[in-house]
Length: 78
Image 1 (cartoon, rainbow, N blue to C red):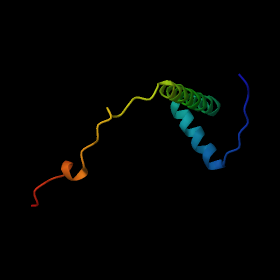
Image 2 (image 1 turned 180 degrees about the vertical axis):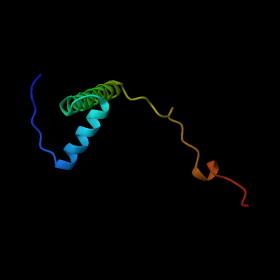
Image 3 (image 1 turned 45 degrees about the horizontal axis):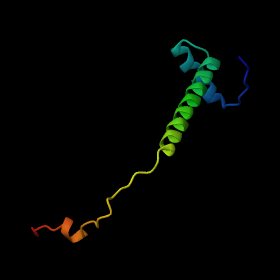
Image 4 (image 1 turned 120 degrees about the horizontal axis):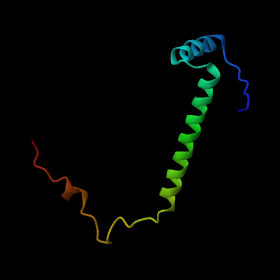
Protein backbone atom coordinates (compact mmCIF):
# COMPACT_ATOMS: atom_id res chain seq x y z
CA UNK A 1 0.00 0.00 0.00
CA UNK A 2 1.08 3.56 -0.72
CA UNK A 3 0.32 6.51 1.51
CA UNK A 4 -1.81 9.39 0.25
CA UNK A 5 -2.00 12.85 1.78
CA UNK A 6 -5.18 14.87 1.32
CA UNK A 7 -6.37 18.23 2.58
CA UNK A 8 -9.87 18.60 4.00
CA UNK A 9 -11.61 21.08 6.23
CA UNK A 10 -11.71 20.47 9.98
CA UNK A 11 -15.45 19.87 9.90
CA UNK A 12 -15.03 17.23 7.19
CA UNK A 13 -12.26 15.50 9.13
CA UNK A 14 -14.33 15.53 12.31
CA UNK A 15 -17.27 13.99 10.46
CA UNK A 16 -15.03 11.41 8.75
CA UNK A 17 -13.51 10.33 12.07
CA UNK A 18 -16.94 9.83 13.63
CA UNK A 19 -18.27 7.99 10.58
CA UNK A 20 -15.19 5.77 10.36
CA UNK A 21 -15.43 4.97 14.08
CA UNK A 22 -19.07 3.94 13.63
CA UNK A 23 -17.98 1.66 10.78
CA UNK A 24 -15.18 0.22 12.91
CA UNK A 25 -12.43 1.38 10.57
CA UNK A 26 -9.95 4.22 10.12
CA UNK A 27 -10.36 7.32 7.99
CA UNK A 28 -7.48 6.09 5.81
CA UNK A 29 -9.15 2.75 5.15
CA UNK A 30 -12.49 4.50 4.62
CA UNK A 31 -11.02 6.81 1.95
CA UNK A 32 -9.14 3.93 0.35
CA UNK A 33 -12.29 1.80 0.10
CA UNK A 34 -14.30 4.71 -1.30
CA UNK A 35 -11.69 5.35 -4.00
CA UNK A 36 -11.49 1.65 -4.85
CA UNK A 37 -15.28 1.38 -5.19
CA UNK A 38 -15.29 4.42 -7.47
CA UNK A 39 -12.50 2.95 -9.58
CA UNK A 40 -14.36 -0.37 -9.99
CA UNK A 41 -17.62 1.41 -10.84
CA UNK A 42 -15.88 3.55 -13.47
CA UNK A 43 -14.18 0.45 -14.92
CA UNK A 44 -17.50 -1.39 -15.10
CA UNK A 45 -19.14 1.59 -16.82
CA UNK A 46 -16.31 1.82 -19.32
CA UNK A 47 -16.52 -1.88 -20.12
CA UNK A 48 -20.29 -1.71 -20.56
CA UNK A 49 -19.95 1.31 -22.85
CA UNK A 50 -17.29 -0.44 -24.95
CA UNK A 51 -19.50 -3.53 -25.25
CA UNK A 52 -22.47 -1.41 -26.31
CA UNK A 53 -20.48 0.61 -28.84
CA UNK A 54 -18.91 -2.53 -30.33
CA UNK A 55 -22.38 -3.88 -31.23
CA UNK A 56 -23.30 -3.03 -34.81
CA UNK A 57 -26.29 -0.71 -35.17
CA UNK A 58 -29.64 -2.34 -35.85
CA UNK A 59 -32.19 -1.20 -38.39
CA UNK A 60 -35.12 0.62 -36.80
CA UNK A 61 -37.53 0.22 -39.69
CA UNK A 62 -38.12 -2.15 -42.58
CA UNK A 63 -38.29 0.80 -44.95
CA UNK A 64 -42.03 1.33 -44.94
CA UNK A 65 -43.35 4.78 -44.10
CA UNK A 66 -44.60 5.45 -40.61
CA UNK A 67 -48.28 6.37 -40.25
CA UNK A 68 -49.01 10.10 -40.03
CA UNK A 69 -49.34 11.62 -36.57
CA UNK A 70 -53.00 12.52 -37.13
CA UNK A 71 -53.81 8.85 -37.70
CA UNK A 72 -52.02 7.74 -34.56
CA UNK A 73 -53.75 10.29 -32.34
CA UNK A 74 -57.19 10.30 -33.99
CA UNK A 75 -59.62 10.58 -31.05
CA UNK A 76 -63.12 11.81 -30.48
CA UNK A 77 -63.29 15.17 -28.70
CA UNK A 78 -64.71 14.97 -25.18
